[in-house]
Image (cartoon, rainbow, N blue to C red):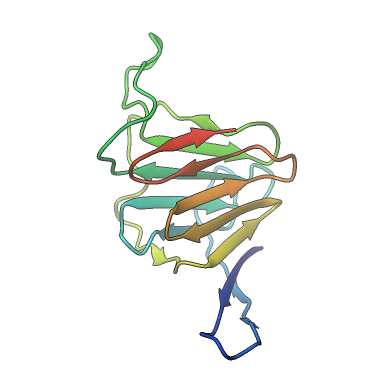
Length: 150
């Protein structure tokens, strides 16, 4: 199950925080019969897909002004340095991509201050970009000016 968790912080002097949880799910076709959700940053610069199930993952593609990772591996015949991935275990990684995230999908806008969770993978949208992590602490942080994997 993919869970969308927006957190709305009222302006002072209101002392309370409002947390709303939306259950969002949509089925995609095989191979994994996973639930998947396409989402993007409010600017539209970062476009992602997060999938639940046995092969849970997140992939985010970035339209960038500056690429942090520019040394393309010899084995990569696709685009390099603008697509980031994460699974339920291990560190975040860069994808060598030959196809974009489904261009026919209509992504939801993930407002700043909100997050998504699927099978232990969490993605958080902030003004500074999108950060995705797994339960082991692996992940990636992407924004227009800088990207990193950990």
